[in-house]
Amino acid sequence: MRELSLHVLDLLQNSLEAGATRLDVSIEEDLTADRLTIEVRDNGRGMSAETARQALNPFFTTRTTRHVGLGLPLLAAAAERCEGDLAVDSQPGSGTVVSAAFHHSHIDRAPLGNMAGTLLAFLLGGDDRPLRLGYRHRVGDEAFEFDSAAIEAEVGGLPLSYPPLRDWLRDFIAEGEASLAVAGRATGTEGRGAGTGHEPSHALHSAVGQKGENDAKAQES
Amino acid sequence: MPKLKSLEDLQRIREQAKQDLKIRTETGTKIIVGMGTCGIAAGARETMHAILEELNNRNIDAHVTTVGCIGMCSKEPLVDIEQAGQPRVTYCNVHPDMVPRLIEGHLVQGVVVEDWALGRIPQEGIGQSKE
Image (cartoon, rainbow over all chains, first blue to last red; front, side):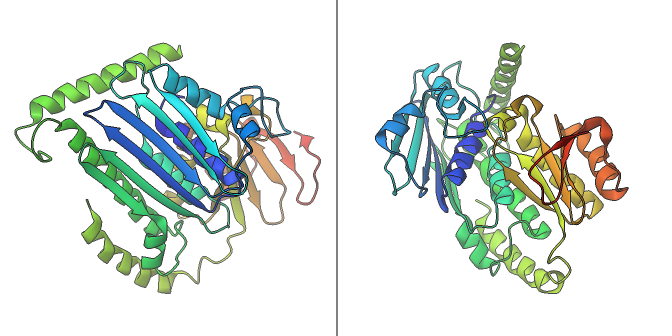
């Protein structure tokens, strides 16, 4: 997949299939240790040790519609190609934790991409069962976090798909994620550097970003 | 963090909804986007956002939901449109730029967009007949 955020969406869908009602996504970007960790934790039905081990085998799936299951193997490959790894921790009846670690600055690490798009697609596309999503994204010392239950409580249980609420949610997540992008850029300087004085690092960052995109395109073809 | 400002917004949305919500109880239109590994890799997330955007622009009320893989991975992104009293139609390889025509044709004009339709599933039936 072209973005790590797409893997996150895939993991969230796995959790839904496992009957989860409570999901927690954590993205930790430790810029000092140069480490990126993505963790998805759910309260679904869980897996036996054997099934959890098998889940990393691309020719294993619990589905009957096809014979391959590529979600976790693809994520494992994405992590391993940049000096990271994937761990699946699960017990029948007590949910599953999938965590993937990456060498943050590794040239082969896919960009995190559109996390806001992933979270929205998940929050809006759920079935009718009540879902609770906790999200926490940390970059250096800055963090953006929310709990879907707190938002729902604030609007008196309105469905998140109610258009004005959906628009609010989109802006809220986009702004939260954008504030982290600023934090990431300002690494090594004090504070978040809003506005002037940080153009050089900004320019450098976007140049690197563009290069990354071109790389991704080159790989694709 | 945009949190403080946002809480007030939420109160406002809550008030707004009190007047609004009666209108949108059951819409009868359901749009289902394939969001398995294969769908996601083929761009289903962007397709779903394009659908939400188009519905919003045209002020159409429909329930957009996601589903896992149904085994036709090469045809992803798959989008099913189900309307009360009509067979469910499956569209294949639906990319964001196709969404306006799809919504215009199927939901506004009520005509199945044959070019992109993969098949239809009768309301109650399990069997699927090819177009």
